[in-house]
Length: 267
Ligand SMILES: C[S@@+](CC[C@H](N)C(=O)[O-])C[C@H]1O[C@@H](n2cnc3c(N)ncnc32)[C@H](O)[C@@H]1O
Image 1 (cartoon, rainbow, N blue to C red):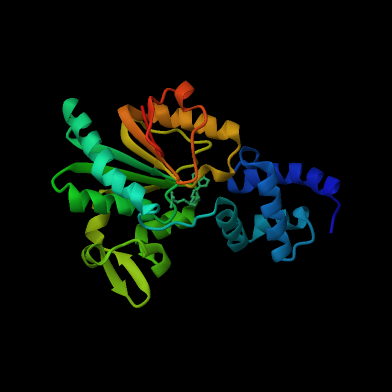
Image 2 (cartoon, rainbow, N blue to C red):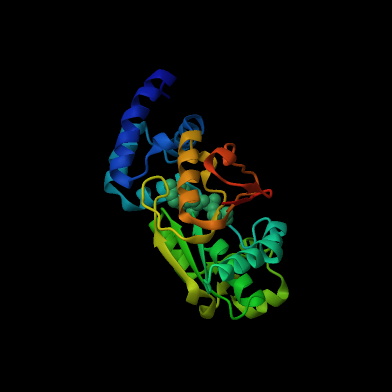
């Protein structure tokens, strides 16, 4: 095992290599957690040090994908924080529809940012289909991880990921295939998945609802602040940003969000 100073030095070089190889800037993630997680990854896979690990990263695509999955963490489930999805359905979406109508707009533009395998985007599509029939909407769902986006398009889930799905919704929106739960094709028609790095890439705008939940946990405060400003700019007037159950936006008012209704921030 190396001593901590040596590790810190190597880590600085490692961050540059990772940026070049997989396009993720580790400087924008909290350093202590990130170092700890990477240390545990390289010891799990028996690499001697960061240098050896980087050499393998350059050559072995499977290690590269495993590592990218590991640092970006993609645990998800349908209707995560079910009571908040109820609030979304009962209060937030009706408000957004009436705002859109007031502006003469007939559709809702929704973004699931950091969508993982798509459970959040499909949960929202199910709500729209089941409770707001006839309402036009589109859902953009983005993630940094190419494999994750591929899986999201397929839309196949494990039982733990659908534990909040009730029987009625299950019957209507999923095909049960053994121990797998596959989202039905018609649910996908308004959902578009693409790659996007929230810390680097350009955002489009005019969204009525942006959902960015359980994505920023390991981002630095600076990275989070910049991201929330970009989300604010990407929202339409009176649009809503929906964040994760354990998250809050410290400087929401300074950014311009006018009302915080516990996890729902209004522009
Ligand atoms: C824990 S999952 C959250 C999924 C979903 N939003 C939810 O709450 O269930 C976090 C996702 O954020 C993605 N992610 C991490 N860093 C990202 C970045 N810089 N840009 C875009 N997506 C990122 C990961 O690939 C992962 O799929």
